[in-house]
Image (cartoon, rainbow, N blue to C red; front, side, top):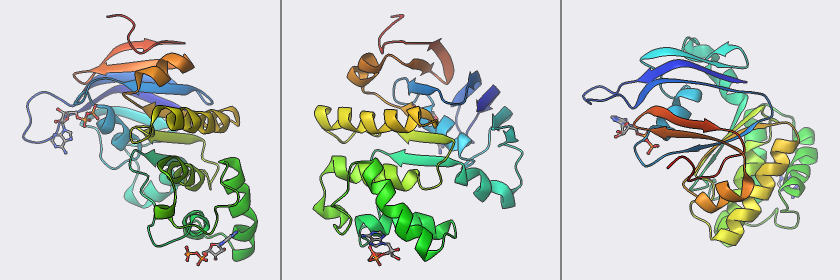
Length: 229
Ligand code: ADP
Ligand code: ADP
């Protein structure tokens, strides 16, 4: 699903590289936590996977697609294969819950009748049936994150990237969001989640890739947050 080979990223006008010869392979259907202190390179790695930026050297394959070498006109096709969830939800504030999910389907060119069928299914998947007509500001943080997950799932993407998805949520709500992500993972989507949330990592016991100073410090199956220190 994801293959990183000797990926390095050096930003202009900065000394040490943000990523330094990172290699890792993530298989289809895996659930992987990406951890490491602030500044260790997690966001840079997620940006490279989305082709928001390109590596200085090394190669990145997603589903066999050469992300770094992809011509610009093929970038939208790559991004259609990758769902994204963020710490700050990033919903459209003036659209309803259903409208937010519908918008993502409209962008994909789905017909109104396809959208009418898909939106309630997606809202049910994330446990938001009954909230379709609410506006984002009328929802709790956990509910807003559920909308964001539903929106990220419209295309049944093979890969879901989550950047601190529980970072703005209380612990109980964070655990509920993890159940939603687990369900999506069980349905076949590969999940790569950057997080600082040690209790969630410890509770889930999934693969952990730990970055430090741009390099892979640890890559361990069924791991906890604090091992190896
Ligand atoms: P993390 O997400 O783990 O906090 P980042 O990927 O944001 O780490 O940052 C890794 C390193 O790259 C840090 O030293 C950071 O200062 C640097 N960095 C990140 N983005 C930029 C940028 N746009 N320009 C210059 N340096 C950057
Ligand atoms: P907004 O004002 O938030 O954009 P709209 O009511 O204009 O929301 O709806 C946008 C799209 O969302 C509509 O074209 C429709 O396909 C879909 N939609 C809206 N409400 C629902 C709903 N309750 N169930 C399913 N689809 C809906």
